[in-house]
Image (cartoon, rainbow, N blue to C red; front, top):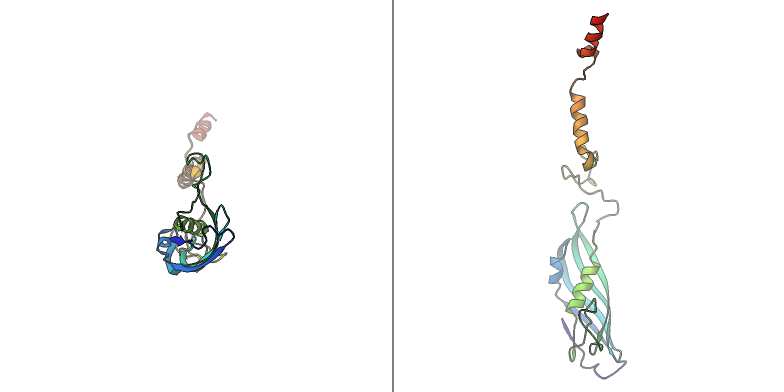
Length: 194
């Protein structure tokens, strides 16, 4: 998305207010986003700082996310803060390899806000959205939503490193022990000597 700033060029201290709706199609491809309800609404203030243009404000969008615990869809309103300075030109000695991030630069009478908008949205989508703070999630065995009710599955946690020992314990309890009442050879030997 390109923003025309021709009215600000050469006028230090001047500002431009931008209220605009843009397509939010790129948000659909982000993790945990089911779909987007409407456009992305921008409310920005662009100020000529003399050395560049300061862009600040916020983006608003309504999205439907998937709960990371129970996978139910949940409506969420995103209010995303945005702030970036676009320089008139790259600083002296600028080398792409020496800077971790690319320095945004005004391109003539335009600012290219595409990367800034996409990065800001991506950084503000919750990593693990939750429909309710007390959501219990799904049963790891049968998939029942535990917030709706408990299931009958055995959910005893066993450390995967100890699983072979659990199997060994289960087989040991199933097979009969060799004791004196099960024909131990040691007991017979002692009886015969008496």
